[in-house]
Amino acid sequence: MVGSFLNVVVWRLPRGESLLYPPSHCPKCNHAIRPWENIPIISWLCLRGRCSGCGLPISVRYPLGESATGILFWIIWHQVAQRQLPISIIGGYFFVVSALLCAALIDLEHRIVPDSLTFTGMGLALCLAAGFPMSRLALSRPDDPAAGNLICHWALERVGGADWPARLPLAAAAMDWLLGLLMGFCLLAVVAEAGKRVWWGFTKRKRDIMGYGDVKLLAMLGAFFGADACIFILLLASVLGFLYGVLAPLFPKGRGRPSLPFAPFLAAAGFLWMAFGNPVFLLFRGGQGDF
Ligand SMILES: [Zn+2]
Picture 1 (spheres, rainbow, N blue to C red):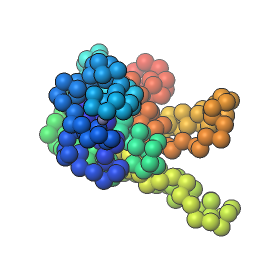
Picture 2: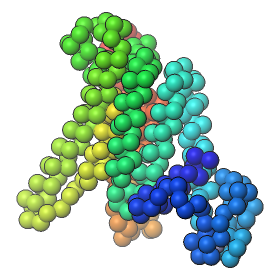
Picture 3: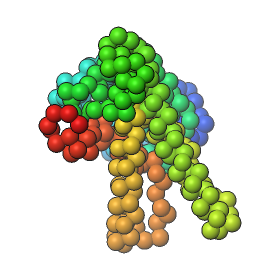
Picture 4: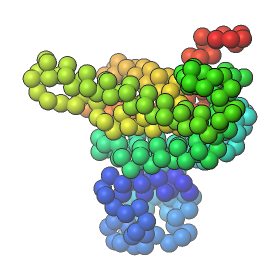
């Protein structure tokens, strides 16, 4: 059902339409979608992918988006249970999965990442940090090596001593939020500004190498997952983008296809972080005592 709503978001948000009104209808014959025609996946299969009013094909992206959302939610749920993370984080995680899916699909089609998505995420992350500070701090607890948040721990120790999180969980969680937000923003803002200048230096033409939509998307991920996550997510997204750039021309369909925007790679890397934590950290730590 969330996936069904996300389909609406992906279609209407970049077009500036209201998400709630008008209710779902066929774009050709205006046939209002009846409740039984709006059951995720099942209705599309029963209607054999066609509008019951005029027979216009209904895009396969609807059942695909619904299935993908369901599968991604299930993976997150499973990982949260397995790593015994606090259950209060699941709402925020589900929001991030949804936002990443929408950001990736909207960026693919329109080459923008809407501010309303990323700003909502940053605000929600702050609300969750304020509402459930212990859950947020538990995400970077030392005994879960996949979730180590070294930068925040380092900063917390400098500012208030090692026991700061225990004494003032709210302030510590808010600081984790702020550090992540700044780290995400600064990392990609540097890339965006440097790219602009290098392009200008070589071609004497103005062009954005990286849009600020991507910058704000990484800032949102930092706001949810902390400063360490930004570094890992940016590294992984760059590797994924590089692999795509190298491999895509090898396939006949990839020839002449315009290069992909960056948000889908950021989204994939962000999801992998959420589901599996930080493998780089595990690698360095080697599972033995202190880092
Ligand atoms: Zn129709």
